[in-house]
Image (cartoon, rainbow, N blue to C red; front, side, top):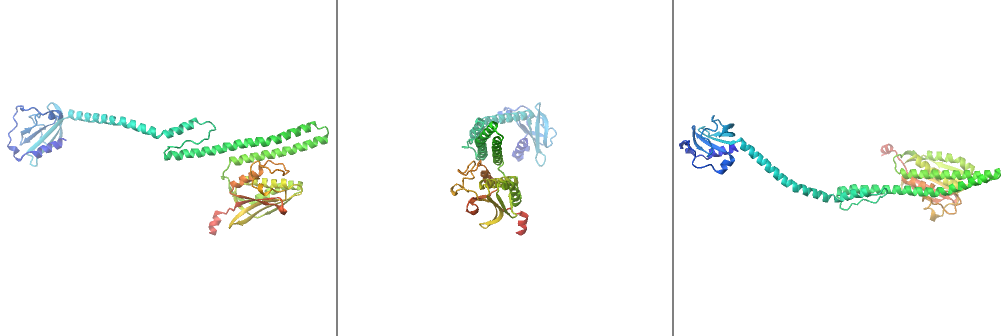
Length: 420
């Protein structure tokens, strides 16, 4: 600012400024204008050592006695001032400009105060506007928060998503999907508990009655007969409990994390061997036809599936029945797959009812065999977990039942890559 003032004064001087006489030492007749007094800025024009022009408040003595160009700090009119001096090309004329440091500080403080006041004046309404906009924008989010806080322990109703921003909508929709899965899981547990209580009530009552009969039996033969019935009831109840536990485990672990490549024919051979003793006891004939078949599955779950299929065939075939079990590779609709088939010559199931035998706790009326209606529902559930299809048809010799579970064949990726 001082430099611009000094250069402006120097460039505006006429060429004959040197003809001016020195400024007389008497005070000027005209008082300094208010603008000069307010700014505190004074200047002098020196020509060959003579002060020919000066501002009204400028001293007679040189502001900068050394007459060197540039910035300096000098004492002017009894106060320290910032000074700038500039000369023409011949160093004949020099303009000296000064302004008190106190005035600079006052200007800085005034500017800072004005800026702070303006900033405060803008920030207050701006903050209020931002607060209002945020509150208004987040009303749907607040509604979701309130809805979550007010939910009861088993309230799985979806959270509101109306009016939510797109980013929040995706998050709340994920929460709603999670609530839906939790609802299905809890409902499954409730249904399982209710069904288990209903299914266990009858056999437990029968066990209690058989135990009472055994206690009241008068002869050893009568007591043995009652105990034999009691033992049979215990076996049935234990089997029912085992199936209920298997059903609960499948419902709780509906994932494929434990699936591995599996030789199904070896598992079939092991399971059938376990049932051979029971088949001989009932004078039943088990036939086995297997070949190497690789699938992707869980050995424990597939063991449950096999045991339930074979157990179902043994129970419904009756004394002297025949059961054929096979595990072979087949090509269906141009694609290779594995067919696990269990066929018997029992009474069978009427075609209209074949789709219902896989429903949980469903039993065909008039079958004449005890059961819980859980075994084939386990087969259906495990088949779903292994992406397998179930086909039901006629059994042996035009009677009985045939159940085929078709699994996708598993191919070793490395071997398939080499073949490709």
